[in-house]
Amino acid sequence: MKLFKKDKDKGDKSQREGARKTLENSAMAAAFAEAGEHEEARRILDAGALPCRKILVISAGTSFSDRVMDYAVKMAKRLNCPVMAANIYESSHGILDFLGDSNKQAFSQTAEENISSFRRLAQDNGIEFEHTVRFGDSDQVVDQIYKEQGGNISYVITEPDPELVDSSGESATIPVFGFANAMST
Image 1: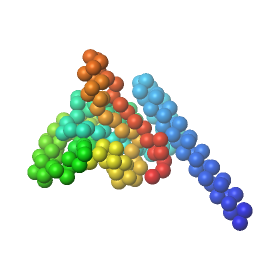
Image 2: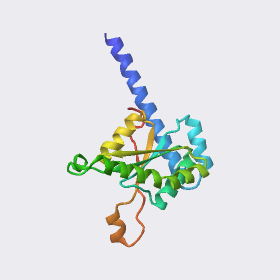
Image 3: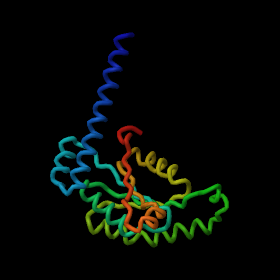
């Protein structure tokens, strides 16, 4: 029995090391891409044979700002990743239970009408694009999408906090979150 346990431990260690190396390569490639060194980022990605994962772009409303759309498409182009946009009607204190089907339908319809400029920008840049409309808590919706996509999401981009943008008087940095557990689902 000890022999099997020992082999299992080696396998677990090897998997952890592989996942760590993949995450390090992803972070390094993203840093080079952000610095404009696209060829070096591509070399790192190709050398590590990293799978192309999606960039999830979320909005807690029916539209996306031009800044976020531009940023997401440029990042996707540098990393050669598809984009998935999600309009999320954020639930708060059970308000979704109070929302009627007509309000949900209106939100969905408006989001579908507003997505055309994002879709066109992505297509004009050769980026694969998909869109979804969801209802619920943003964190739970992102987790649900991540699971539905089989863990095939590397980054989440969202709008800057409106309170920070208004109070600073300047453009706030666009938040980008990476999935640390991108290798396991």
